[in-house]
Amino acid sequence: MKITIGLSLILAAGLVACGKAPKHHSGTTTGTTQSGNVDPNNPTGMDPKASTMLTCSLTDGKQYKGFGNVSLVAGRVTEVAKDGDRFRVKPYTSLAGEYTRVMGAVPASLTANAATFAAAPDRWYVDTQASAVTIFTSYRVAYEAALTMAGADSKYAAIPTETSATENCTTFARQAWNRLPSVDEVNACKNVALVVTAAETDIKARWAYTLASVLTAAGFLAY
Image (cartoon, rainbow, N blue to C red):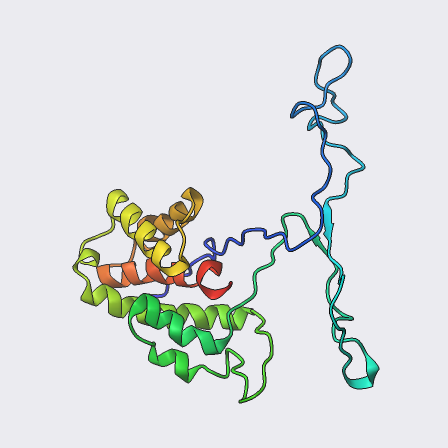
């Protein structure tokens, strides 16, 4: 059976690369009037003139120019939202090692789909860009690896319950992402195990869909 899994686990944490943080109101967490009531025009108490952007700029180091005498950093983004997404998609060359680290082996479909992941030729590198095709293919590759794991590990032999889904989602996400998942991330994983795949009669496949959702998240596919 085909099950459509929402990409609810692809949660990117905002990373500040450089620049100074916006200046905020130095008083209480809410804006107040002279009478002590909350100011309806500024309920947060934040300086409305404060910038919400972080500006980055080159301060030193040699600058290089490419074809047409154009600076190689001419198109670099110089401003990013304070809580903006600064993740970069892992290149194809690193995915085999990542699957080996987490799953113990490289899925055959990963090698077969090298072109889909824009595998760069020798002595050449292009920053990987995510697309609907690469995300969908990533899920298929992840499902293959997860189905093999679910068939070999006894803890995936029983129907997911609230307890087992919580434990397995937390443990597997920590292994795959090299960090503890947040409550929301664990809940998103549990939703796949307990709700989205509820109609799946194959228990191992049900767990495989769940584990694959973790492997298709930014915590595994990006850095």
